[in-house]
Length: 287
Image (cartoon, rainbow, N blue to C red):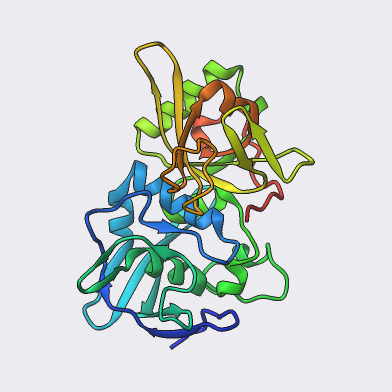
């Protein structure tokens, strides 16, 4: 049953067998599928790395073939919970595999379900649940078609976490040191972070470590300073592949020096309280 979630060509809705969680909640549990919702998948990757219990708390198994997914409508002064109930019929392709977000963990019972449940729950959000969200799109009432249009990294972090998020620009920070300490403080306090590499006329950004995709959301997984005093950032491409470090794993996870990262990261979704000069609500969408 579609339940108004919308569908794309060649996709059917069928009951999908599996367990809600398999071997915990990890940032590589899901890869982005063929629709342009990198902002959502990156948010799930980042949250799984930083605050996995938040994801566990988002989903209630109603033990009747349905799940309730908890999102948030964050206003200027308030944050209201918005619960969406969906059934276990998830979008599959002609081969019976998950059509959109691709779960990476499997058991004898089937696939890991939490990723597909959140993705369908988000697709079912409609104008009644969050009217402001769909003012961003034209001629759509929600569904996977809306998710495929691209989205806003700070807004999706608010919907997932219930906290106020804004977009930090490179000029939001005094210098690279300020950027590093601010982002690390947020991660240490279990606030997930996503970012996009943009502001280039090129389709891709060729760094000394490899190629970054322009106009595409990435999850920030970790920040650390090693014994040599080098500052390292770990990120994940939600595609689950095409990482610039060419480490042979092809899992989307890669590291780069923070100094190199700071040269290319132009829009970072952070809790508003961590941003000295927030630039909230600018019209940038990530595919």
